[in-house]
Every structure is written in C-alpha cells, then in structure tokens.
Image 1 (cartoon, rainbow, N blue to C red):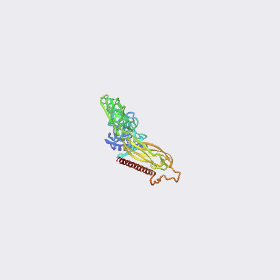
Image 2 (cartoon, one colour):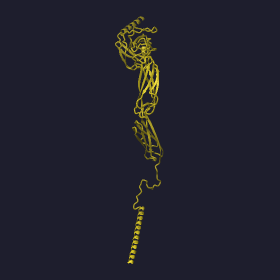
Image 3 (cartoon, rainbow, N blue to C red):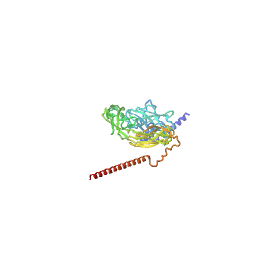
Image 4 (cartoon, rainbow, N blue to C red):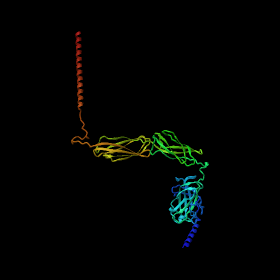
Length: 494
C-alpha cells in the first residue's frame, strides 16, 4: 500500500514539474488597477521577470528551508509590484529607515490546483534588509487559467515595512496553512530602494516645508468682521534640521491684518516636526469678491548644507457680505368686524449688497379666516423693498392674533427666517333697534324752494333799498326848500 502511495506521489510531482516549466513569465512592466487593500491607484511598476526557477534568497537558519519540488518557484511568482507611503501614495524612492507599504500582485498555480482558501495563505518577509513582523494581508482570490492550467491571482500587502539598507531584494516565504503543500519562496527587486548611507555628509537630505493643515473657523466669514487664520507648518523627512524658518502671508486687495506682522519667525525645525502660527485677518466691509485667496510663503535653511528651502501654497477663504434683510412696518386696520374682509400687509427691505433668493411668506394664527396662507415671492435685489399681503376674514368676535414668517436664502447659501407678530380685536357687526329707522344707506330727500337764509337776505336787501330811497327823497326836498328861500331873498332886494 505504501509503495502505491509513493508511486502516485512521484507521478503527480513529475506532472506538476512539467506543467510549471511552461508558466508565462511576468512582463517587464505591468499595469494594475484596483483590488489592492488600502491602495486603489493605477500604477505601472517595473518588476523582475519571473523564470521557471528563480533563485531564492538564502533564508536565515531560523527559517524553514524552502521546498523546490514539485511546487517550487515555478508555482508562485510576482507579476506586478509597487511601493507606497503609509498614506497609500506611490513613491519613486525609498531611503534608509523609510517606512513604506509594499504591494505585490501574485500568480499562484499551486493554491488553485489544490483549492486553497485565502485565509490559509501565509506570507512573511524573509530578509534583514527589510523589517516586517507578522503576515502580509491577502486580498480576495481571483480565478484564472492559462496554458498551464488554473491559477489564483491575488494581492499581497505588507504595511509599514522599514527599509534598513543593504540591498533591494524583497524575499517572501509563502506557506499554506492546514495543508500538506510545501512552503514556496520567491522574491522581487524593488528598484525604488536607494541603498545609500544617510550618515554620509555628501548624502544629507534637506527637508522641505509644507502647510499640513489650515483653519479659519467654523462660522461663515463676513466682510467687515475679523477672523483668525491658523496654519500648521510641517518639515518633511530629511537628515538635517532647518533653521530660521519664517512663515508669511500675502493678502489680496481689500483684506488686511487687524494687527501684528505679515510674517512669523518660527526658528529651527527638525525633520517631521510641525509648528503652528496664527494670523488675525479682516476683509473690508466693501469687499465684493466671494473668495479671498491668501498666499502662504515658507522659507528656511538647512543647518548642515546651508541649502535654502522654500514653499508656498494658497488658501481660499469664502467671504460673504453681511445679511441686512430687514422687516418694515406692518399695516392692519384698527376696526375689524365679523364677516368683513380685511388685509394685513408686511413691508420688507434688502439693505445688503447681495440679493436674497427664494423668498417665501407664510401666515399662521388664531381667528384669521385666511384662504391663502403661503406665498412665493422670489428674489429681492440689493437695495430694493417690497411687501406681502394676506387677506383676512375673521369668523368670530374677540381677539385676533397671527405671525407672518419670511424664509429666504442668503448670499452664502444658508437658509434664514424672520417673523413678525400682530394682533387685533374683532367686533360684532352693529345692529339698529328701531325697525322703522331710516336705512343708513338711503340718502335724505333734497329740500326744494328758497331756503330760510335766502329769504333773510331778500328782506335785508329790500330794507336797504327803502332806506336809500327815503334818504334821497329827504335830500331832494331839503334842496328844493333851500332854493326857494334864495329866490325870495333876491326878490326882496330888488
């Protein structure tokens, strides 16, 4: 029985060895996209060409010796590789003591032939050139098939790998847990690794200066109101400190500091360190531009090399004009009767420099009897006024109260609401007790003939005429008498 088992195993090994010799070699450049845990960029990375039997880096004495037959290096090989920083951004160079992520696309015929699950695959780094503890992360297995038969393609992700220098070969031990399959050992050359001693004075790396974060608060910035611009300067990785670091700002027209200087002296910064600076800034009340572009300038000097380092970035701060939409006078008649139709009017004005949009008005309250309770008014341009009217018809005597609400969209896009309350007293319609009383709506009959005051004037005029006639008669008689006396006197003289 044992002889039969050994014979079958030997035959199977010969078949696998013959098939593995025909596996396709990896291309010199392979483009990969997606499917990488923590890494979604499409990259094109040079990788070493796989061969039917690539040489494996000798493992330390503490590591298990790789098995070369029948599932040797021809069973597993790398078809694509890339190196990223810890944030997942691809890097082109890796210096001593840099911490990076290594992402490998692997083709594995052995795992496919024996239906190995992803959680059964264990990948470890076998090298003193790179420091990595634990197992690499395995992506989902993707089935494929070529002329050599079925295979699994998957991604191996090694996070936070430290490059120690001394080479650029990245060897891996691949084991299949809970399986009788032997361990596979393969490697890939990482051309991004720069094997140069950072302590060499000629290889000193000067950090750069960048703005890691900025903040101008959570509230909207309004023209004419001050705000604080907070900046966090960051010195990137390097092998020397920076001295005389200065952070300054360049402000656009219409924007100024409320006090202090446009520059802030930071002093010395070590690699991978941060410094916080704050500038108090205020846009003028007449500032019309919606966004203020503030330029941040950074300068420093390498302590060892004397190399000048500069950096610049632009921070855009949205600025809006103050909202000066105001309510005016509310107009409501003093006397309101039950069943009578009346109206309430609310005036408003936009005193700001920007229009307000999508203005809506609504009314609510008690004993209003309003058929229409909501109106869409639209936009109100800067410097214009308008009004809104609501018709009321109270149905019962007593108090009447209500609120007119205006809702609009300000220039900064926020929704704002203003309200105006009003009240009045509704009275019963007046009634008359005497049913024979003349209808108040009827007109009194007009009087005919000459009124009394006309007769008075006529009598007065007659009396005046009579008096004048009497006076004239008396005067005439007196004059005649006087003439007669004169004539008698003349006769006597003769």
